Amino acid sequence: MKQALLSTARGVGLFALARKASASKLRILCYHGLWTTPGFQYGNRLFMPPEQFDARMTRLRRSGYPVLGLDMAVAALAAGTLPDNAVVITIDDGWASTHTHMLPTLEALGLPSTVYVASWYVGRDLPVINKAIDYLHARTGRDPAGVPDRIAAIDALPPEARADAMRALSVEFGVPLDWWETRQFHEMTPAEVGDCARRGMDVQLHTHRHRAAADLLAGELEENRVRLAEWTGLPPGHFRHFCYPSGEYEAAAEPVLAASGVLSATLTDQGTNAPGANPFRLRRFLDGRTVTDAEFDAYLSGALDVVDAAAARMRRR
Image: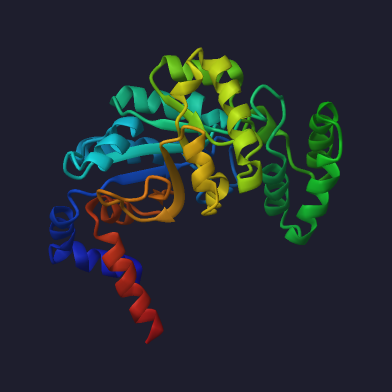
């Protein structure tokens, strides 16, 4: 139904009309990592194939939409001086594929981007445990109800024992260790984070341990900022943009962010951002493997909100 609505909307000129009507709004694209392991595909909105990311960024580059760095865009949004239909590219978490695959594509196309790095896993030869265990269950068709207990069991081990435990679990499940060899669930190394910054990718805050409860946030930001400054060689004051881990927003976080010198914070909620929007509640478009080019174009044009509302009304009938 949605694809039919998008086709109709484009055909009757809604995309073009929406582009003009929403020209003053900021569009923010959201990505995570790329799926570099052969075979089974996991994580629709978490990982997409490298060739799909390449095609998407090429499509954006050819679209004529101006792509800005996050810091410039946030300042222009507040001042009401954005160029028409401005777009920002953001990448969450700091997965290894950000450096190995996404950065070269963005460099080749001359597109600025921001990566929000959660720092605890950086520098540890460990996969992100909860995602890797969920993947092993999904790949083998096992009951996902067992995931929390296995996560808790491995999290209870000292960090130096977790790598062996994860490899042993993969062997127990009969899953080849190709996902370990491709660093599918690993984050970047400190050297890779630093290389991203040197090559022009903006590195920003995502907490240290990927948790954003308001009572922990000040400490998480400080530790995150110290690590990022160490790895990039940039002053701590450079790190002044934030992404809520897993999109978990609390109103109580806003004064903590402001007191910590943070200027903006992004959600995973879909939408565009009008001049004067709350800079601590910036909406984005979460791209993914099953997102079509038509949906992508509809978001950039500003028409997707109209189409989504129409689709919801039709479902209620």
